Length: 193
Image (cartoon, rainbow, N blue to C red; front, side, top):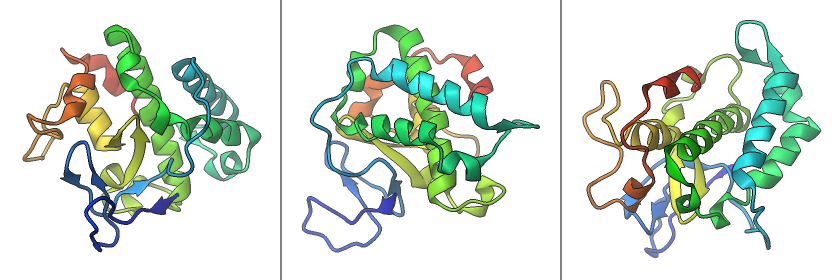
């Protein structure tokens, strides 16, 4: 994981990325699945990500809903998950059929992104150690960028304003609106730790 500089504007604003499809500035975001695009994307990527998450939770869960992040970081199961996560930029999230597939995919991706963010941002005990953790930890999926707040409030909550937030995650012209779950499924909060 690394911070990514501005691209596409000839700009020199360090620590920012501009999503060319959305035109939104994302200061301080860390794109955790940045890197060389793979030659081939698994056809069954959503199922593979679900399996990775299930295996990681089964192998590294400790008491009180905590994960053994230090052990997980060096595990072969995590390396295999990373191999699939780097394929997300080349995968089309528009191919998900219906709300059930969308909810499953985005909930699984949210939880994998939390794990990835904790590992890459050096969190020891609690995500509150990292200012703006839910806005900083991001993945590229297809031609779009998503932070944890984008997934939770923009996709899974049908572009609802976050609690104590002033704005909706996506503007009226944001192409990511086509990916949201509408109407929202209130039970998703139980699977997003």
